[in-house]
Image (cartoon, rainbow, N blue to C red; front, side, top):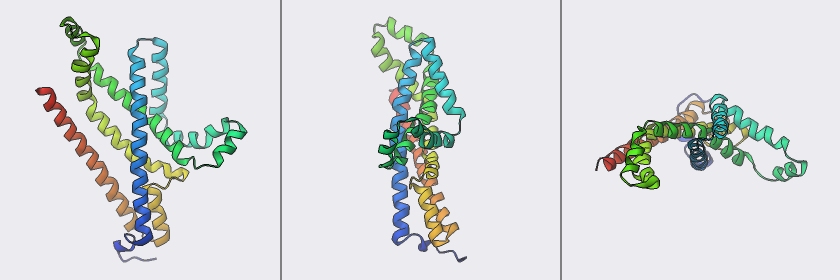
Length: 233
């Protein structure tokens, strides 16, 4: 085994291309899953705001399941379990395509939606109830009250939690290597297997994950400051 540190051995040629491909897949997967998660989260929050007890219980069950079952188990359930419930013809049809990416997006998106929905709901609940009545009394109407009074405060309240869970989603993309998606962690393992440069390979992956996570947190802090300035005007 090679013991001399040589970072250039994995940052050139086909190994560098594999790592870059892994980074691209990781970012793409995180973005698509984030969009799915946010859309579902907004739907879940809307359902809870209806006041329907049965619907609220269903949403609460959804949130409880996804927050208490390990994400990896959920991923395995979608990839290995759900297809077995489908008809034989559907299974054969799915076998002709690469479903790893699809099920990864679904599993990560559904799981993260539970966290996002609770972040948003907590942000809205932190707003004093009297502000809604006050804005309505001023003649703003429900829609304008939500747009100009409630939602801006709700976003400000939940933004830190949303950023933290966005970073969590980004890091959780590494789990999809378990079902064969060639993201950054999978690519790193392949480079390590080919070159036997274990330290160098995982050092690069560590730096990439750390850099992107810090950039996301920095972007979140910037958004929070800009949002606070806009509300102060």
